Amino acid sequence: MISNSKGKYLRKGKVLFLDKAHPSLMDELENLGYSCHYDPAITPGKLISILPELSGLIVRSKFRLDKNILQHADKLQFIGRVGSGLENIDVDYARSKGIVCMNSPEGNRDAVGEYALGLLLALINNLVIADREVRQGTWEREKNRGVEIKGKTVAIIGYGNTGSAFAQRLQGFEAKIIAFDKHKKNYTPAFVKEGSLEEVYEHADIVSFHVPLNPETRYMCDRQFFERFQKNILLVNTARGGILNTSDLVAALKSGKVQGAALDVLEYEHLSFEKLEKKDLPPPFQYLASSKNVVLSPHIAGWTHESYIKLSTVLAEKIKALR
Image 1: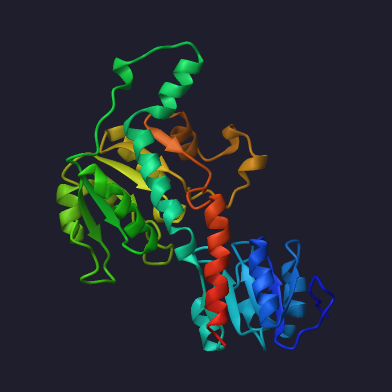
Image 2: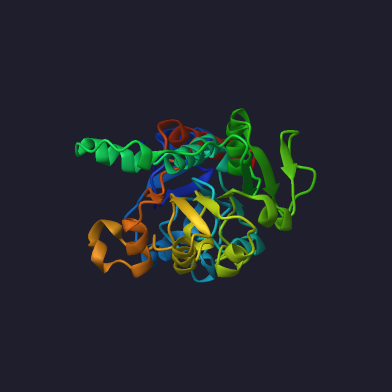
């Protein structure tokens, strides 16, 4: 039997937290009458054994919740994803069992919007390189001359929570903004032009990705994608590493078709970077890591103190709405 932190068994049902969330989420669920338990070290086998007892799961990305696991979810009412991506959940199968799958992209949209802009500014102004050089006593001004966003055409691929937040923050830079989202129509404010992918290929100077990872978007950014652009471009990715073919990006960087890339996410994230030497990582990553026209960060675009709270607050409200 799973008990909550106060030792109570509550009639609403049992909720298991597989990953860390802000404490306010557990507090809110217990106030709603759920019995909550946190077990980040649970094994898939143990999860399967207790899954028939559970009313809810709170997850990030620890487990692949596929049919093999979810078929044991006899009482499960909801799966709450603290974050945006649902790629680790077999959503179609879950829904076929009456399980509501929900996420909380509204909680970190501001963080990602700001971070994408920060990555872009760091890239076009050589901030990372200049910082390292000055710390080493090197004072290079001409070599680190930057470029301005003003007057450039920025293409936003995917105009959901983070894409729209990025556009809003670009507004003051007087850039031309094109948004492409194949699943929406009449969705942009006046300062953003709703465009086709062909218009993106023709006009874009800068491309920023804000799409989920699914079979449709996996490797959408590949050699053929790069070759269609009329101009040489700069690329920003704060979405998912799997949408970008890293080997093809390396080829585009070498050819100059991509003049620079700012990446918060990598397709190699399933590897444990903490336990690997750089030399043991795939050659395309080694190229990125040694390139002066590439900025890298460890999937932290949505990782702010404020978003940590908001992600849980948003999810709690959605779970409340199930009643």
